[in-house]
Image (cartoon, one colour):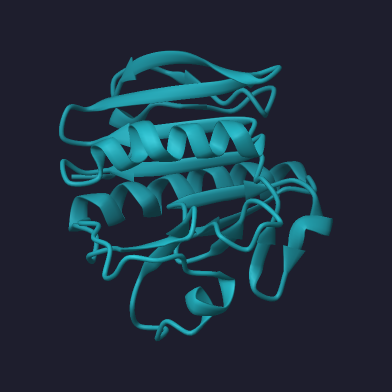
Length: 185
């Protein structure tokens, strides 16, 4: 996905919701970032992770919900930041609205590409930490790595895995995922 700003100035939540539905974009600190259509590999990873995590939640009958992009997440009350993570897991139904999620999801997964690497590794990492996201995964399909950030107090603890490693989801007691076992070819 490629990101570009279209003009200078500060945008708001109203501007974001006036973007045509067929255009993918995020509003971060008052700037709009347009997103290109994701690759087939990106979508395969997204679909498989959505199935694995969704089935886990369903089997346990828990209160968590999982939503794939496009799904609007308004992280703060300032009306200047609305993101569309690839996957959002929200465990408090009070955060869910007809427009998406208001507040920090419990778990966010972003599937990165070479053009979004710094966006996901720097801008969104800091954004999600400041918002209080409990767990943030960056899946780097180009290098077959998964960066797992788990919020401890006010900062993330970071771990790096390969697609062959079994990765434990920190927000759930007994969910582990090995990306190499998923049908993402």
